[in-house]
Length: 107
Image (cartoon, rainbow, N blue to C red; front, side, top):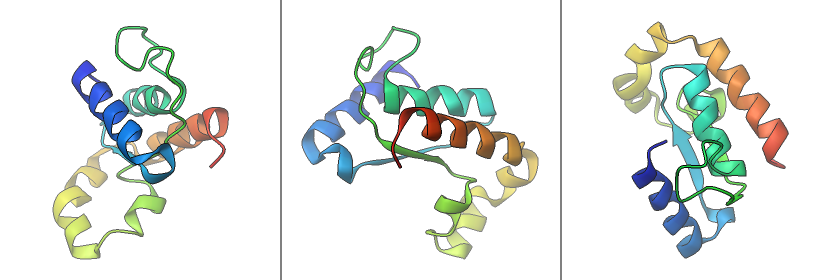
C-alpha cells in the first residue's frame, strides 16, 4: 500500500471511526494483499508510511473473497472483477487474507 493511500485510510478512520471503515484490496498476488491487509490492521510492516506503528484494526477483505462478493450486485461484480477472478490465484489470496484477519483483528 503506497504512502498516499495509507494517509487516506488513516484520515478516513480518524474522521469516521474504525468501526465504520472497511478496506477492500484488489492486489493481484496473495503476498501483496496480505501486506496491505497487515498495514491497515496492525500498522505498516515496512516502517515507511503514515501507518507505521498505527494499529487501526480495520476490517479488510480482498475483492475476490466471498464475504465481499456476496455484498455486491452480481452484474456489477462480474463487470468489474469477474475477468480478474479467472486469472488470479483466488484460493491463495483468500487464505492469506484469512490469516491476516486471524492474526491481527477480532473480526
